[in-house]
Image 1 (cartoon, rainbow, N blue to C red):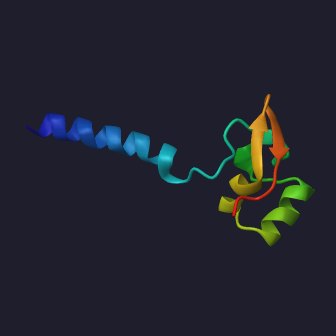
Image 2 (spheres, rainbow, N blue to C red; image 1 turned 90 degrees about the vertical axis):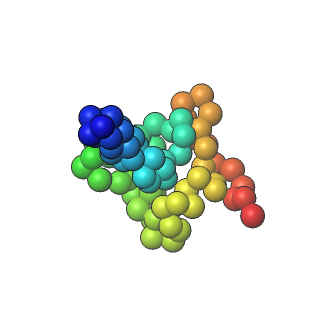
Length: 77
């Protein structure tokens, strides 16, 4: 009885971080916003200015990815 419960708990904990904060723009390359490794949390100058003006979750309202490049479009209202 304990074994299936512990397996289920382990699966939930393994999947949870992957869906906890989905704020990235799907399909965009890391170098569109980051300088170096994303885990270093060093952002380029344009991204720093945008994050000062807008919240991180709003990035997807104006940006998307096309052919592996970050694209910009009119914000959703």
